[in-house]
Image (cartoon, rainbow, N blue to C red; front, side, top):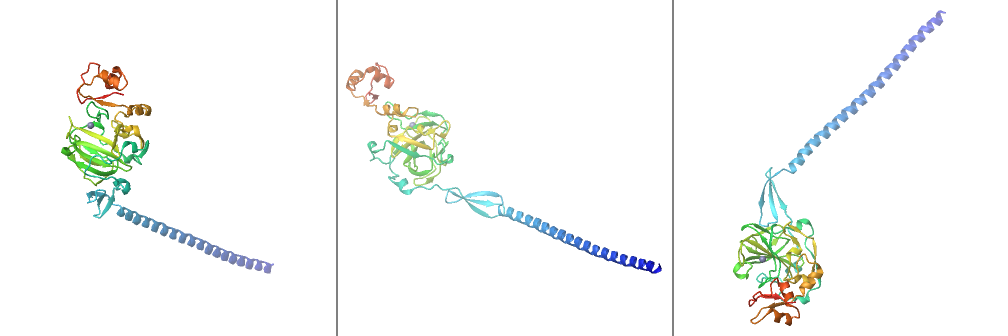
Length: 344
Ligand SMILES: [Zn+2]
């Protein structure tokens, strides 16, 4: 019995030892796990801390790379500016100089003659010419957005081959499209245009700016749509300050209102199909192509000594009534020598 008891006590001690050993192992294991977790947390913390530190340094670095501009300076090239930055550094700003096909732009180039391509006859022109006026909305600027004072039209003694826009003397005149200044001519040499600027654009189109009070560009200068090229005025054959604006393709004029809505200050379309009959002084914006074609075939007679409406009607195979209607006159109107009448 006692042996059994002894054995029982012994086994109790042995079991206790085993349990202690197990507990010790368990504790060691738990310690290990905790140590690992601690290490992981410590490393994660170090990682997050390093990441945040790098981020702060990087953000500061980025801010340092793009400091705010405090001033801009002009350079010799008007399409390049220098920007001064708040950290006392500077950099160039490229404003985008227009680029042209030089052969196309400078063919028939003459800075001393108002109308280019004088040798080209209307018969040599194709029936249709497609002009790409601007490749984007930024490619056009209305020279001055104001009321149209006088339109492209036949007049009694002298054709009006442009559009007159009301302005105040000194108003800024902006170039309509990218191009190169071809002519800058003073009033006394332009026969009525006043101080005149002519700018050539890609594709053979030219725009004329007449009656200016001041030039702000010179021949050969590249200009970008919207750039102020001169100031409006009243020079030349002009009553009251206004801009006389013309559009010509290879020297031949057509109604500028075909491409520009001056009162809204917009280009009607970026692509314009110019038809041969549009070069007629009787062809204008607002007509159908049939009306324009019929109008372009009109015949003009300049009144000479002894002319009467009856004689003109017989000569041109029409009636006095019809001649009166075409010219907005009555049969009793006195025909002054030199006056021009539409007779067919
Ligand atoms: Zn005019």
